[in-house]
Length: 201
Image 1 (cartoon, rainbow, N blue to C red):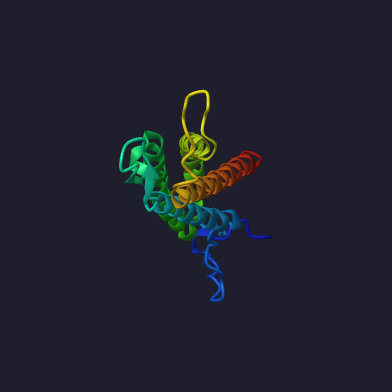
Image 2 (image 1 turned 45 degrees about the vertical axis):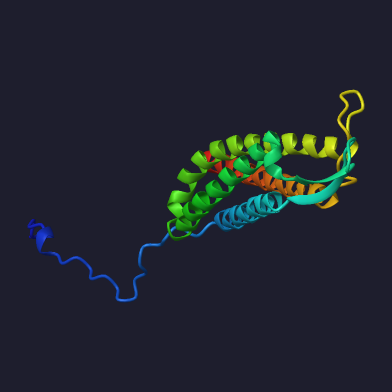
């Protein structure tokens, strides 16, 4: 007669883990994170360049005056225009933001799981900063255009024929700021793509 005793499950030893067992996998480092870090470094470089070029735009020249001796020394500097002061302030804030956001993005390289959380916050700040840079570049560009072309209706004379170096600095700074704005557009598109990719998983 067959025995009806059940084997003692408690006494059955669990299989020993294999010596060559692999450790738990770490989430892979996303290539999007690396691209974001590169773009944020580029944002810092462009904003810093724009600020440095603008604040070094002072030029002193002899200008004609209607009274004797009919000429006098006059200086053109970025602090003479509120629009250019706003430009420097806005680009300085953008440079500071790029440093902080770059540090957070670099930390996400070692902890890939945190990147998606950072993206959801960065996309809002990037849009806000894009608006600030665009408005600052527009204001500075308007001043540069009046300096180059003048405005006969308002009686504003063009000054770039006299302060050529000053105008070249202002124009170059505005151009670099537009590059910074384009970098921010790329960062926003990258963040939106990452969020869409996350929602589809």
